[in-house]
Image 1 (spheres, rainbow, N blue to C red):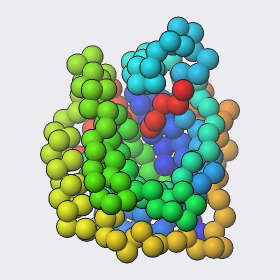
Image 2 (cartoon, rainbow, N blue to C red):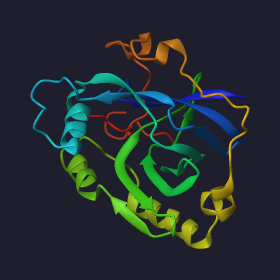
Image 3 (cartoon, helix red, strand yellow):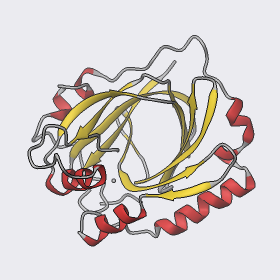
Image 4 (cartoon, rainbow, N blue to C red):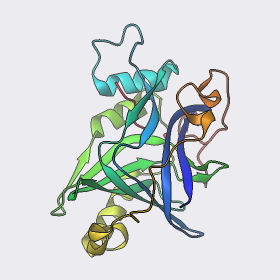
Length: 230
């Protein structure tokens, strides 16, 4: 069993770190898995003065804008199988709640880079939900528009075109939308992945002033932005 860490980096600062098991890896695609309960560490506005009355979306944008946030540890609610294709501005996630398939979650994000930990990317606020019956729903369009208007994000591609590409894949039932993946199950011998010490809560990589390199869309330079909690 090969473990990696998928990290999100925003303006040179660590934003999230989640351990994953490698299911498939090729020159152009990574498929990784995290069982329910996997512990990740995430940027959060919990405990940051002045943000108590803000919406979750506004707290996230404030953290991205100011780089003032705390790190919190949280377990994954769902078991998740994640597909990332080289150069793509999204990852496609299949989720299960126990034995039940919960649908697909498309996270628009920076194209991945490979690192000493595994993969590096950054969430771009916009998401697409696809229910188990295949019905899509775009999510957080207003938050994305606000992030662009405020100059927090400067994305050099049209994410609507990326969404259209993903929807074509959905319509053709190709790649992660191939129905055979719904019946996929992890090897029962696999253990729950864990982060390396420096990426865990309180680890050195979370220290203010530690630079993890630039990769940005509005502060991070895109190659060719994780969920803020609380």
